[in-house]
Amino acid sequence: MDSNLIFSVRPACFRLLLIWVVFSGSRCASQPPEEIFTSYDRSLVPFELYEPDQSFTLPEELREISGLTDAGNGMLAAIEDENGILYFLNASNGKIHATYDFGKRGDYEAVEKLGDRFYVMKSNGDLTHFTLHQGKVNDIKTLDTDFSSANDIEGLAVFNNQFLVACKADPEVKKNDIRGKAIYSLNGDLEVQPKPIIILDEEMLEKWIRKRLPDVRINDFDPSGVAVDPISGYVYIISADHILSVFTQDGALLEVVLLDKKIYRQPEGLSFDARGNLFISSEGSGRKARLFVLKRK
Image (cartoon, rainbow, N blue to C red; front, side):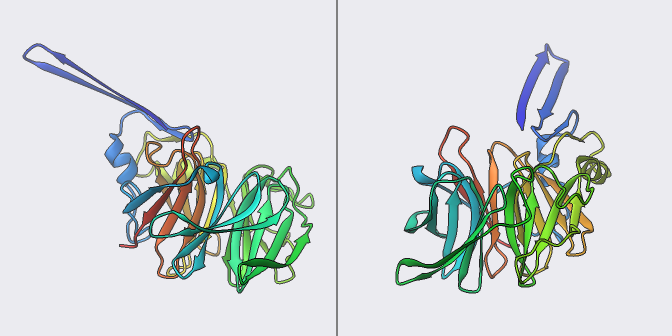
């Protein structure tokens, strides 16, 4: 989202304010930035996304951070999209606490924890999972799922002891004729269910948000992360196009929030801790990556 603010003052009588806000994923020609970023229902989304409570610059190793999850005990687990390394981050300062090598180089895009196992998914849908014991990676297993590189997997979340998987690109699996962007579930056997639990597209999101911001246009929505709020049970889907959408577990749209690109340069990781606090990681886009902490209000 690029924003240009131009002021012109004419002598003694006239002040012209021209606000032009252009989103990489949406644009608005007449709403002031404050309203654009603050106009959402706090009872549904109890976070001040326009003003994070804390932010930390991440180490250089995580410039390309691509996935984030709660690891418990004040730790976050993160991955980056080039190396098979799991990073433990201190949630209170963003510093690396430990690293664990689990695989070769690859396009790793999502990470989640279920029970005592960590699950890491590549963009082509290959799923690697393992345990950690006494500082070592154990019991590594790799599974080929029904996803492919055409789906371009970007997000992974736990949902009723199953997984949600966000497809950034092609929404179809097994030629099921889906249009838009799709969020699928994996059953207990890690099999992809044929029908997505959530289907969304730009038109749906734009129609929703224009009820209160009538000049907004949403040009694109490519999911880059997904997480389930442990308090409300709502499904949060974030996009590198600087949009956050919130759904019920039945796939009903609840809220759409526009994110400030000046804060979230390229949001990729999304996670909640057990208390319902929200964490968002953002790739550096040529700069160092950042971790944002949003405390539940």
